[in-house]
Image 1 (cartoon, helix red, strand yellow):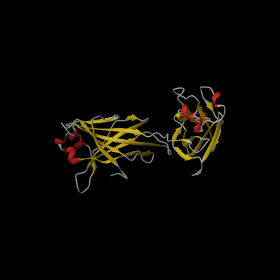
Image 2 (tube, one colour):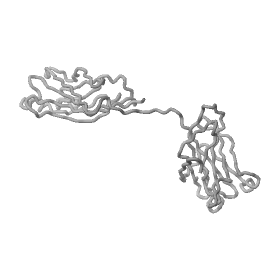
Image 3 (tube, one colour):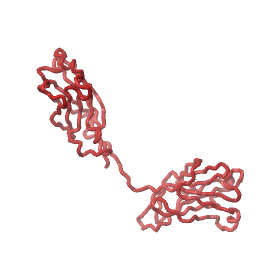
Image 4 (cartoon, helix red, strand yellow):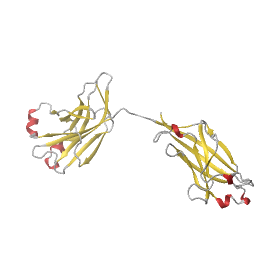
Length: 305
């Protein structure tokens, strides 16, 4: 096989998408060719021009009669520092089964001024190809083909990285005063910052969804304007706490979430029922004040480099 040649073999019904070469009167042609190496007409795909080469003399060794070899040649005139990266498939039509033997190059090849031709040296053994009962040559006719996949150089890499050293904990406490005078919409805390990323806490005193049932509490990005849909994301492990001002029976909710342009706010629409919140014996709402804390133990950012 060719240097570091890696090929996958499959059988499929669909014909090649880019080019097919039909050979009629094969035996007469082979008698006339000295090297039995056939080059196709030019075809274009992926913005480049190619020819398919079928070597019917192929690769041979001492153990068998050899194999049909197939190659793809780039015929564009390249500059010294120019290159085309591509992967390809070769096809041999089985007329008896009406399907194609497909050999796919798995390595990806670098076509350049120094090397314009790449291929697969062992596509199909001659012993199988030449045996008419196998269906590859019928009525002295055979068909080969190829598909080419040009690999565009538009590589991008996303980097997921912590915003601080390990085991760093962040905490913010918000005292909400005059709770009874808050409107039915929502109330936003002052902006606070954890390692350069700004946040706010948001509460809906009468609930975000069904009004009059529960208090809703959310952690929200303070400035999501620099996030684009499908772009930067921020991964956070956090804990929202409603403090018990009489004892240690705090209400805690833990979560991990990705914050992004179309998901800048996460939390709980039913954090605590209003009946429990307003029960003075439970200690969550005293002197018309409640205390909400947020603890953050993990922050990662994911963005394109």
